[in-house]
Image (cartoon, rainbow, N blue to C red; front, side):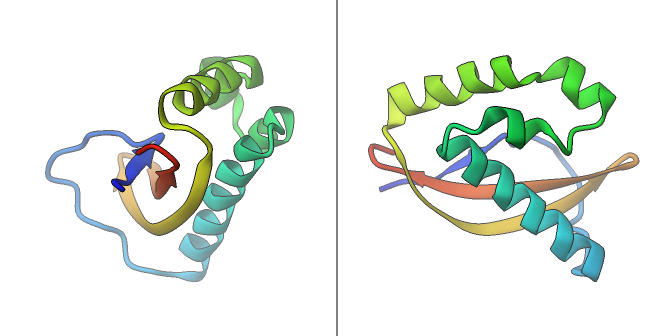
Amino acid sequence: MSSILLLGLLLANVEPTPVSKANAERVQMAKALVAHMAEGRFETAVEPFDDVMTKGLPADKLRRVWDGLIAKLGPLKRTSETRIEKVARYQIVYVTTEFERG
């Protein structure tokens, strides 16, 4: 089965950020986000979002995106590796996920 990158951005020429305590916390938050979505807890999933993220991806929109993934790929089976990249002033955490059908 193939894995997909959930909520990832396609970025060119971006170097990975070294592991640190702050990055470990970011990874934990990203994995929690995926777990909340898998459990259908979208309001909880968006609680850590800042104003920009909340405006761009409110809970109802996040639910529609997730439901679309589930309709196409089936239920989430597991998460595996993560990586972090710094883009401008943001730290982006990629969580690799495996779904039942993809």
